[in-house]
Length: 155
Image (tube, rainbow, N blue to C red; front, side, top):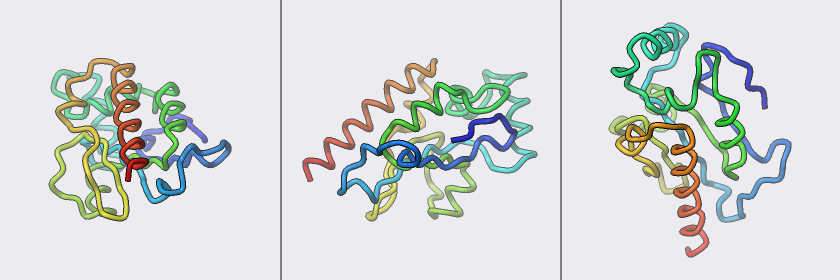
């Protein structure tokens, strides 16, 4: 997967099965993880977010963006981590979440699970906004994905 920095780097789709063996089980194949930023898409919005994050970080509204991106794009440590989660991943802005999945009432940023029954919250905005480091985010995501996988196996 290409992780070259761009202003539009906030959006990408990752499929862990491309180029490596996916850990997804047969009953998990319809599950997709949605990392949703509390920001809108587009080059102008991305530039405004970049400036806001750098000049007034204490009032920046997207801790998911702040933890997973630097000034040049997605942090390579994060990109490698999500690539190994074993599920298809989508990174979406709030307007893209509305357009693609019809979700309008989500408190963002968040990690959502999309499956045939709908969209559900895996990690809340409150939880993401309470994190201080990328390591903490990776730890929380790992726990929730493991719990989700174990719940799928029990079904």
